[in-house]
Length: 138
Image (cartoon, rainbow, N blue to C red; front, top):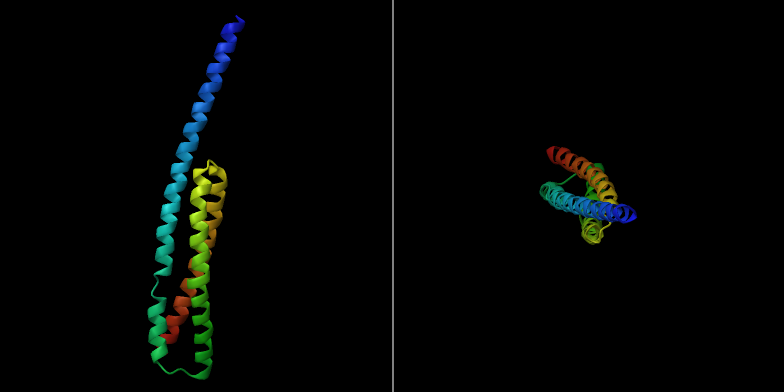
C-alpha cells in the first residue's frame, strides 16, 4: 500500500512538473509575440512624419515667438527620437533574455510597463506632430 501511494505521489509530481513546463513554454511564446508586436509599434511611432513637418517649417521664416516655440518643439523631438528611442530599443532587447531564461512573469511585468511608457511616448509624439502641423499652417 505504501509503495502504491509513493508511486502515485511521484507520478503526480511528474505530471505537475510537465504541466508547469508546458505553461512556461506557452507563456514564453506569448511574451515573444508581444515583444515582436512592440518592436513593430516602436518602428511605427518613430517613423511619424514629424521630420517632414520640421523640414517644411525650417524653410518658412517665422516670427520670434513662433520661432522660439519651434526651436523648443524641435529640441523635444530630437531628444525623443534619439535618446528615448535608444533607451526603448535597449530595454526591448533586454526583455528577450529575461523571457528566455524562464522568468516569464518578470518579463510580462516589464512588457506591461514598457507598453505603458510606449503609449505615453506615442501621445507626446502625436502632440508634437500636431504642434508642428499647426505651426506649418501659419
